[in-house]
Length: 200
Image (cartoon, rainbow, N blue to C red):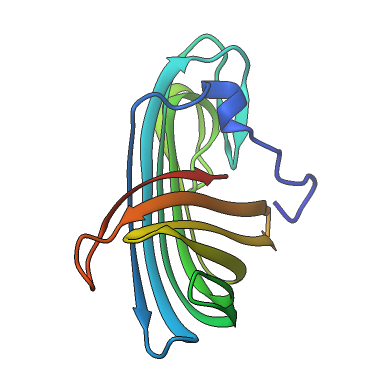
């Protein structure tokens, strides 16, 4: 807080467990400007809410959320990404492309429960219900690599990965986005596919 102590570390997954009630949405668009030069846009949304009895006190900002009380943690996580790809290796059956771009990431957290502490106006409080919120918008650079293979006529396999790490104020994080997918091109310009996305 700039006076006598540092911001405490809070691990919400450890305190609240992994989220079971989650909504995740992802959309990707790739525009092949030329065979070797592409633009890619990606949107990702991961929002969840968790409620549980606290096993220990959680200190966050001016509030201490009390052990044994019921608390609700809500997380909203939105990502917008635009990147340029260069296919530096191309044959009729495969390509390998490197990418560089920018992600706009918006994380919002809120924790509601029974607290002890001090309200923003300096009023001491104890045993009352409060909500603490935090918002972190951040534009971030990102690097990536993508590979694609034509394994049979009209069938296409793709693997890609994007990585970065960032430290802003009291937030310290790393990002990994790995995908593996297969696509059936039922038309020259359109296809349907199935894939697996590991987003950490």
